[in-house]
Length: 148
Image 1 (cartoon, one colour):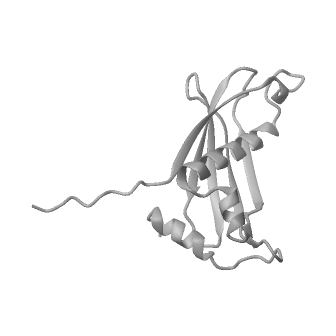
Image 2 (cartoon, helix red, strand yellow; image 1 turned 120 degrees about the horizontal axis):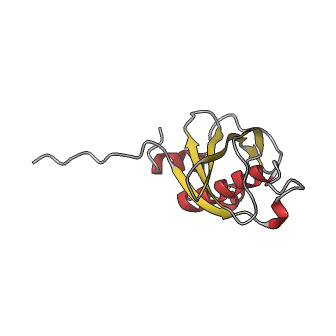
């Protein structure tokens, strides 16, 4: 009897829930546009915890990963007290960078609030030089999750 080959996931995706705080809304009583970038950060942190790619792990390996590109498209507002789901999707690339796409949804009906993306590059922590090849620890991480 042949064993069925195990299917790997089509993509690495994390979902985390946030609750809008009063301090995040503006004079129009909706979430200030800059807070959505913070929600992307919440998504990256949750993704890192879930998949073993946390900021301090990267830092302790001798690298920092600044964001060099960021997009955000606003679809509808969030208000105080609403819960939202931040979906963070890892985008595979062979280049020495980390790419994510985001979808923020209202928890109440899963309607899309905002979408976006980020690109982070690897800098050597000691001299801030750009890494042109993936660091060994990142290559091992990709292999663990069968990202080729």
